[in-house]
Length: 234
Image (tube, rainbow, N blue to C red):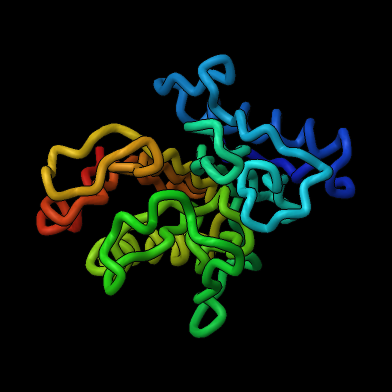
């Protein structure tokens, strides 16, 4: 697949343009992962955003598209009826050298609420895991870009060295299109938290305009993390 050279649909928040942007982001995700059943009729992207909502804790109701050109975070998926019970669906990003962050600028932490399920991880070793890494220009201000998981060693060093760093290096000299899809199935590790809010793995694909390529599955449990950083690539 050639890198997707597109700009994000623009428009003020809470407008019909944003509805179209959400449809577009879901279509990009389906294009990037044709073997996965990302069907809106099965509830993918069913966050039911409510433009009247003013509650900062109602994650499903305040779920709106990114304004960052080239970054497409699919609308969150509702897993139970509560106003805060939505999880990340996936993301696609077109990353260039100007999008990269390095040094202190690379650490843009979540600035709004924790992703669903984070309380199931140990208080001293939990993290909001970026789908599109901060160093790769990923958003730190929307829950669409986060799943819950372990900080050590999953978030760092595993995801950093296996995924974030290679993409950041490649994007210095080429356009890199990245797609990330959380997989919400039960982990084989009996000690890993379970439930509809918990992703057990991430599907990760990256394609560069000058030949860079990654096609990996990242297991998020500690049992897998001890083997090849929990990453399996083809």
